[in-house]
Image (tube, rainbow, N blue to C red):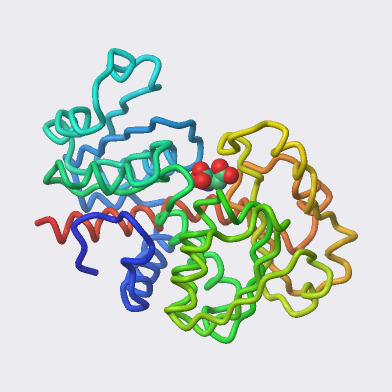
Length: 304
Ligand code: NCD
């Protein structure tokens, strides 16, 4: 993998993805031991939006590589409230850190930041844009469960604002994967994402109901309705609570169906699914550590 930054899943070729996942597999086999491949590494965590998993798993990843992290803290406690621009913030942090993990509410923020600094920038979510490191751990999880070829994946929920969906769909287009998108009409995949999938020759179908495709799926990737992205609360309320699944819904599907979710969930997966063999979302979240360890190692190796 030869990239300076990780901004979008569209950067990743099939071979890039396989290289990171293979390395993550090696890391995962020996996660208990300290890897110490990067003693002295300082990773900058710059989160302008809330995060639990992404921030903590990058934090754990840096520490398990023998390094440490520095954290900008919440926007409210940072100089952003004094009117500092994103460009200035990251130009300062590059003097403190060997790489920057950035989450920001504006689409394009990570790309912009990467143009101002010389250390690797990892996009940890830019508004409704992209979230490529999440995609790597999603692919890792899918590969562990089913392999990555000759597969049928359903992606359901908020396909319009869900950045994990945009990244995952783009990365899956590198593999022999049939992609089914299930959402209300108002939360369909954005036109630009559909266009890119078409250009990539991906096998894509769209649905408003899960039921007709459920029996064909190997993986069902469920997403949260991204309330914070809706311009209008009444629009959110019109779709909130649609597309919920429970153990009974899944009883009509294949026995080996894998249910994934980037988390946090609200009410789209009922707690009774947790007790079934379908539930893979907690393992998926745990996979974030070895995958981000592998990713950091590879970006830092490129950076020299
Ligand atoms: C996702 C995100 O932030 O885009 N969470 C995550 O990183 N695991 C999904 C979400 O917030 O719904």
